[in-house]
Length: 202
Image (tube, rainbow, N blue to C red; front, top):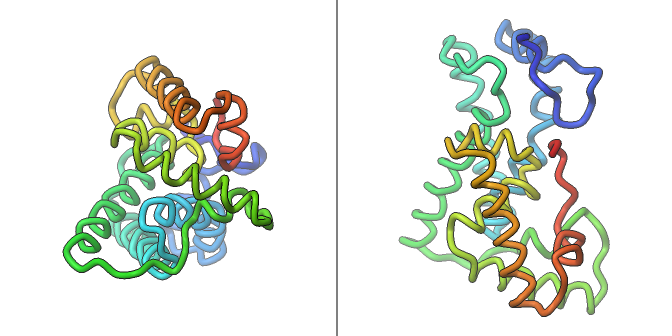
């Protein structure tokens, strides 16, 4: 009770880390940013397709988190990840709306470097196809795929974030992969292999 799951290291007590960060422990704050910064950035870049815009969103997210923690406005104990990514999703949506009002050329696409691996010409082409297919998904389907693979959330955490039954999200995730399969002419397993490995649990 009170111990939040960590995104990658089961030995780390996330609840204690959050409490320490809220108390002003700079090391704890750096650990939180180190754990979640890359995932927030990946989520933002997957939608914005722009490195600088994603960096700006990430900074905004952690500035908001710092303020809320310091002011005692974090009251979702046991659900830090969904709380953090709810803030991130809101910032991403704000950035998307701003980009639509003032479209600019992005510096790149997060899907071009999935999993942090170097990509050859053939791999880049498949990433571009996957990116285009993702854009053709409905917003709810695309959202669950992005939260699962870019943010690295478990299905239970996604359910907490979106306020939907986990069974509904599992079905939506399966449907989204099937749609990507049809668009790309490959199997569900192959589609999942092209996406980043989720950091969260099942």
